[in-house]
Length: 544
Image 1 (cartoon, rainbow, N blue to C red):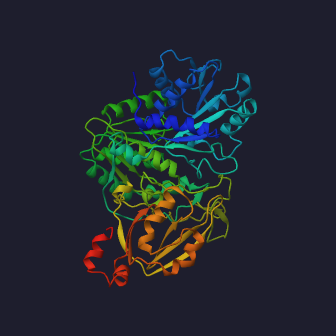
Image 2 (tube, one colour):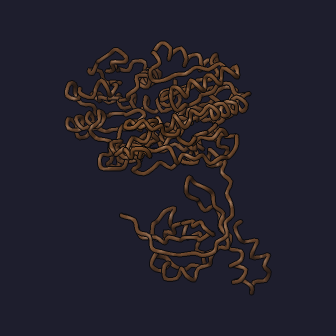
Image 3 (cartoon, rainbow, N blue to C red):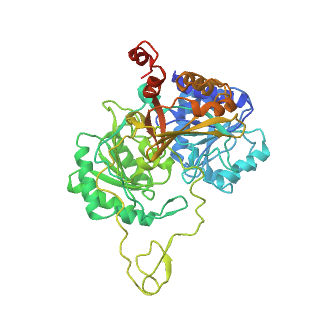
């Protein structure tokens, strides 16, 4: 009998509670290797215990449908399920559980009794527009069964092309029922730690334009394909990966991938390229060889990010950049599964991705980012004939002017900073000034925004006397050190200018922002307690 891990059981129970509180369409955030398919299978098994319950599991990848069905069979060998997928070669909508490819089923909503529950695996792949296949199908189902419950599962609750899946007028999901923390799973031994090595280099992508919220593929591929860059980066990968057994390299294009393979051949590292057009037979062979250890290095373009499971992977190299936080998390996640003899996974980032998105366990998805991809493409002017041409043109179509190649925007040394939040070292910043203001948020009591001026940097925090729970307790615990007496936000704002001010604060980077870890009130308190018996007695009580 399969035993659920505690967090898997909690994810299921929290989702039931979510429904019990009157909301219907949650997302379960389950990091790569957290056992998402097991959570899904157990929920299906429990729901099917109620006669008449009908369930759909949707995905755009047949591999995911097959994995999810296999997990259900382990839990319930007698499960009544079928597939509706052209890729699998079955089209059956009359079973209690249907694993359906969205490409095949999106026009079939009216051809079978509507489901009671719909699970969307890897829901970050749902496009932004409501008129897509996912949007149209779910809209049709809701008309047939307004009480249908839709559950998304993903390691990344934000689309590949924009912000959070729970935001926006066309949002399918209305909240998050459970979020399984990455660091907790690492500490409990369920996930592999990610580390980095190499030179800490700020990668300049200023000359690679963006369209639809992502880097323009052709420009990115050009920037990445400089022969000197590829040669140097591959040499570093080979050097740092000498004692690593299983590598995955994400490339920026087919030609770029072949250049990488050539360099690997020169270093006598067995490697193969896999793309979206690789035949099913060759794809299966390459994946099998990589998982077994027969093939050390797999170079992917547009693949290997979803539905790919090779636990032994202990080196991931990003020879590409992305503005998509979801894609970043999915790529790095390929190395987070645990395997016998594996202690961690080495991440080599040549695309500025860690700097752009933050540590892998505390990423910063762009809110509402990107747009829908229909905006005007970046353009440039020909210096000879003044024609306005597409930014990626290498030669003017009007006069034949040859544009110089774009500046190279990758660096031959990998990013070497922290890739997990617990690897980030906090630092003390001297506080030169403090400002207080009222902060208002819809449906919440007002709070006090505190802005600490630390040279050229401003660090913010919010004190919440009236919020209740943890937020209020945090203010109460600070009151003694502030010298505050206020019980409300209004009272706090009236007396804030007289509060004690820290001489410095200990901050820890959190993506593009900072968390305040500790306050140093030593100087202020020394001044105010000169009447005390000894300075040491006071310092002994200060929480350093």
